[in-house]
Image (cartoon, rainbow, N blue to C red; front, side, top):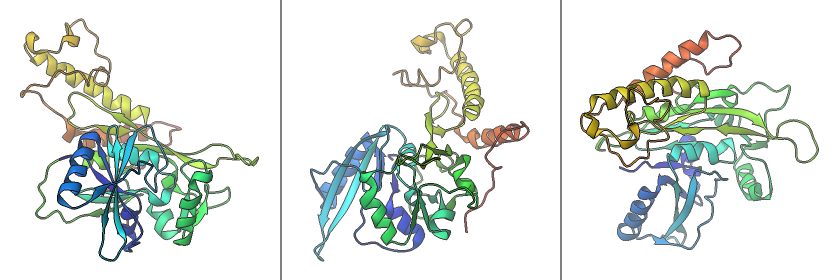
Amino acid sequence: MYPTKVSGSLALQLFQRITWWDSDLDLYTNAEGSSHIRRYLCEKEGYVSTEDRGLADDYASTDELIEVHSLVKERREGDDTKIQIITTKSDPLLCILAGFYSTVVVHFFSWQKAYSIFPQTTFIDRRCYMLKEIDQFHAPRLAKYSRRGWQLQDVAWAGEPRVPALEGTRRVGDQHSWIIPLNTKGIERTGKPDYVSAFANFHVEKYGNNRWGGRGPKYYKITAMGFRALVLRHRYIFASESWKDFLGTRMDSLTTMELLKLDPAERPSWFADAIRFPVAHYSAPYVDDPWLTPRSWTFYDEEVPKWYRQWQALEAVRPNDRLEVPFITSSYH
């Protein structure tokens, strides 16, 4: 199974229980998944690839994006059905968190659950805050969501109520998000477990200066980065350096133990002599090495949620730190 997520306006429609017939289906996946999905849609579902390789309608930009493929299929009513396949360099979720231009479209779903990252501002306050600096590129998109009933605003202004979901370090599955479990009956449970998305860590802060000569920030900036380790099956997303160091130290130690378990001939060439070779976060720089882990190798993904809570507990006792609130198993209602 390829790491694929549905995002953009279709995910927004799912949460709002509404249908906009002129909207597209935006699929975010990696390069291998993009090729497979395009082939299936063209050969089995009657879609035709177009020459349109521009950005997805609700997307801005990010270094995580490789390309966009547009597929169309004629309907009897005369309007085309359009699917945009957004190819990402690594984890599609990293591309989603870092790439959208406004809070109103930061929602996604996969086979297990649907997540809305800013439900309070989107569905209760009906505010659309900016995640990129406004320019002419955004004009038609802003007009579209204004017609659909959202009030457009760069950031929450001084004197207005605080917006906790737009302040500090968060994770995708925290209590600020609206989470809808999906019916998975009859679906083969393969691919990434849900906690990989739920524990994706990101940071939100006001950013930028008023380009029109005013004072103060002009949009919110979301920061998120990828994390890999040889003792983790999946890629993870983090924003806090403290969390990265907490997890990375454990990954280095556990990776060393796994390598020492092996016969020296089975170890990767870069490991050399584990007794003398310092292992300091080599998990990330060497993870792309063609060396494959043996069957006896132990992975520790299931421990990540527990370690995250341990990190939170340690951070909570540090003075003068602004932290993500403690983990709560709940959904937004």
